[in-house]
Length: 279
Image (cartoon, rainbow, N blue to C red; front, side, top):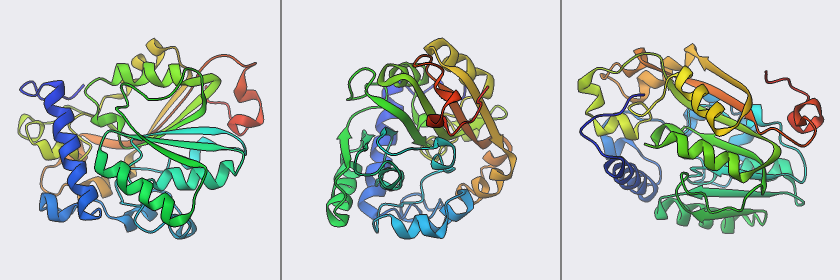
């Protein structure tokens, strides 16, 4: 798994927290912070969101920081409780809130106070009542055991220096039969040392990417079943746009990551997983 040897876990957490705090304060303009192109809100159209999705979410919630569309694989249903790991400005939370309806609940967790403040302001501005944003680390989720039906995450888990703990926490929080629906970047090769030492590569969703076999092993060790990790080679185009000149597009790709917590009578045979077989 990619991780610069000179950086401790706390170094990485602080770098990520500081970077995304500045992103929140800038209104999502990554270019003013990094000097590189970075993602944009409109890049969401390339990631699988529709113009309707962009129009439906509160203004300012879509900060263009994702690398896919976890909603597309989540098959959310009315009344479900959804947890978003690294919720940022709340974009995926607001889309999920519409799908689960007034009987459902969406919880967004982010470790950056500025992002939580922004997401809460977005919710208040839009009058969305079935969304709650909580400050916390995804390695220490502020939710009760077996309290959520679905966990979403969009280009965040790669930023964690302790992915094993993230997946164990996700397993703890899910109800039996609950499922993961994640969009993230995965490593397809070892990043060159010069790229690994760039904090921008970490905060830009590349330096901490795990390879498919490692992520599968971590998910299995946490207890998940029906694991499916599907890289998207076409994602290299927009990854190149995010970090021009570093060449990271040759070593990482966006992927969909799906998994199920065993129990509740084989959930994925029913409509709660959209009838899909994730094996």
